[in-house]
Image (cartoon, rainbow, N blue to C red):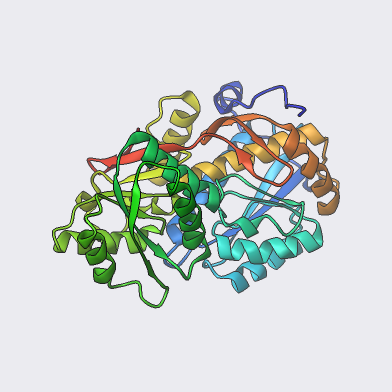
Length: 382
């Protein structure tokens, strides 16, 4: 595979333009990036993190001279984690003149929007839409995050390789494509690992407030680890209810768990020792991560989560692919899409979610997963 020879360096670019601001750029010299995600509602912690990180990366690119001299212009839209509203947001962005789409944030809206983008031949790069069908509708779609199947397989391998559980219970949302997809591949890979799944308990969107039955079955099965491929809202309730019944296994989650420490009203001490598989650790000591985390904290007063990190890398992936392919801002969205389909498979970048990241023609990224644990109310790399 042909590689993009010059690996991106955020710090180098920033140093070159320290203390300067980008000069005004004419509309015809601007690439228009659109995005949608939940900026309001229960999943807003994900959507706002993504939009915040995209804006940071866009500003960095523009201040460093843009994409071969052309700036990025960014337009975020709220889809409230709703498929129909996401399509409406996508159409609003089309009317605005969007040339590429860095979204959506969550999977169900992404599946709906990707169908529209494939029909329009508009390039789509989802930072965090992990469901398989987010990028299977056409050859125009790629993702930055791991897919659901890869998260399930990697989680089972990590638990087995590191011996952190012998009897494992699973609590998952059978009504959610994200959760059930991860559980499916976790269950399959568990057969190859030195642990036993002793309980697999489902809930649905209509029954996600009382987890006493699921927890009791896990406890009765003497599960010493509970795998939760779910979002942090439900996980917080599970941790609270487990504490009330005196059940304290090792807890293990995936990327949807990221956000539990910022949940209003949640006692973060209940999450002490919780582990999750993620491509990003905010306490990593490489210069790219330290730069990104410092800027994010300065602008938004909090540590960026994995969704923010994937979105940040997404901007730089688009930049690299645009430069590799020779795309120019005077091209229409379909022309740019045809070039980016190839350009994405020819780049290699170092980002905050992986070193030497590449993409295959089916849109999947190649990078190594990491694990973090919550200690003293903060994420710590393992």
